[in-house]
Image (cartoon, rainbow, N blue to C red; front, side):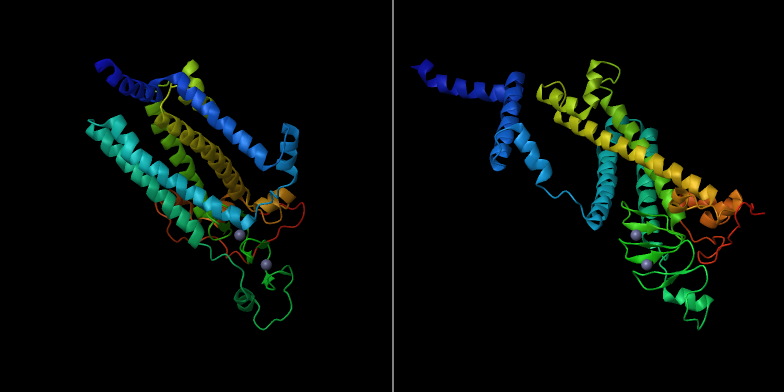
Length: 344
Ligand SMILES: [Zn+2]
Ligand SMILES: [Zn+2]
């Protein structure tokens, strides 16, 4: 009697035990989910073969993205990364790694807040410091009462203003921008004469923030998953996903690994943009001029740098706080050097 009553209870608890800990069960469950999804996709596209499915996927869909959407998503991606890294570092990684060591806790907490502050303030500098737009007042100030387009200037066919040399029209901002370099998707703004220095600082803190986050993430994950072993394959996200389903690593560890991969991508992007911007600042060119090979506005390296950052001795202070500086020039008038004659 006792045996017959307890039998169903035992079998139920067995199922739950299998759900929690049995690896093959989890693996089969994952396979079943993936297969169900593939079958639903095939049915939805009314395709019987893989070839038909691929044809439907790549030839019957409109993959053209709107650039304005891309700019908005870039901005959302940036803030998503900044805040997820901030909360992860401040409330999980730093306490897990340094709890009990007062000095390490204090130093790392200060570093996390400092990084958040610098990323935010330089993003704002790039976004709000963009009084780069060409207006009709600029021409009125330089050439009062003139109706014609001044020599060297162009009349923009899109926004109908007379624009000085080195300015270009941005189709996302729908305005002409003084010494336009490029439209940054992460700040959703144009980088030009007045905000290029903020953008350079922004790149510096992109690099620093991602390096520091990677250091914290890897310090934590390598305690249980060493990189230089077969377990280290888990740092490839798809392998990590398979390892999780097989029960080798936890979901939390997988999420940290995926997050650190995003960090690594942003780090590579940051290094590329920072390097490129520093080269341009020293060479006195914009991306467009470098691309087209236009050397007419280059001056000495020191003058080129002063045109972007203002006084050289103020640059280290700009690293800490983006204050107003007097850049060389006004973004409107440029000395043009003649062909094959180096500027003295
Ligand atoms: Zn324009
Ligand atoms: Zn723009």
